[in-house]
Amino acid sequence: MSHVETEIAGQPDCWRRAADLAGSPGLPARGERVAVVGCGTSWFMGQAYAALREGAGHGETDAFQASEFPLGRAYDRIVAITRSGTTTEVIDLLHRVRTPSVVITTDAAQPAATLATDAVVLDFADEQSVVQTRFATSTLALLRAHLGEDLGPIAGDAEVAVRLPLPVQADIEQITFLGRGWTVGLAAEAALKCREAAMFWAEAYPAMDYRHGPISIAAPRRVVWAFGEVPARLADDVEATGAAFVHARHHGGFAALGRWCGGRTPMDPMADLIVAQRVAVALANARGLDPDHPRNLTRSVVLT
Ligand code: F1P
Image (cartoon, protein in one colour):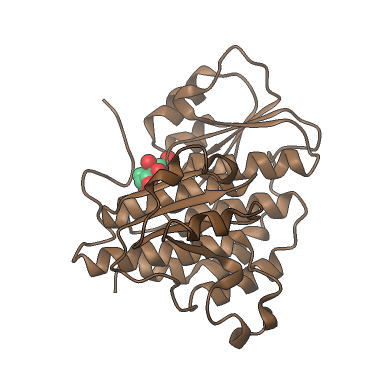
């Protein structure tokens, strides 16, 4: 069994532990103007949090790939997300700004935690796989709990997601992930998992933009997977192309597992991301690839 499979399976417990840290010093206060920064997976978690925070009325919140942070803008606080604490773009930015900052990371001894004003250390969510899963979602769990969400039922959804039958077969050719609002970041992350772990062709878009061109990719043996709210008639438009439409509302096994009797309540999109992580690993295994060690990628991207 690969490291990433063990790490994926451990997410329900990690989310509960992360939620316990919601009162940590340095996390954004209500009303602050906040910028969230990170790279790759950490950036996508930042996008999800930014949409959730602003949508919950806690204040304007933007998310940037760390290298694209607009230095001329005034923010009250920077939230930096970095598993390793060593990623070049994040470290460079923390060197350059004077804005109060909090880093969410796994290792207090690494430069990001030293440079930031405050650090929240999720050492229990660190990973051996190069491919990130549980650190990313635990960070989002922490931030959602800090926004006042009850992570109990969401971790319950995760318990289901780690063992649900997968909704797609390994012989598919392509997946496009879609989201709306905060789930746009989850869609981007799901597609990155497929590319990293399985060298598999996957794309991601805001769901309402999908019919503005990307739908041309849809065809039999290809999949469109929507996180969260599904726009009207989108499923019909996808199915008319011959592609399969996947949404948490329809994943098999819900009725048997309790809370979704009748399929009326879809699982939380963050739990649905777990199902997508498992699909990425299944695609890698079917192709004889090691999902822990993607081609051309290291645990931390340190640029010289
Ligand atoms: C971010 C990152 C990930 C990527 C891989 C290597 O690192 O580039 O996006 O998937 O895991 O690390 P970090 O700043 O979160 O350590």
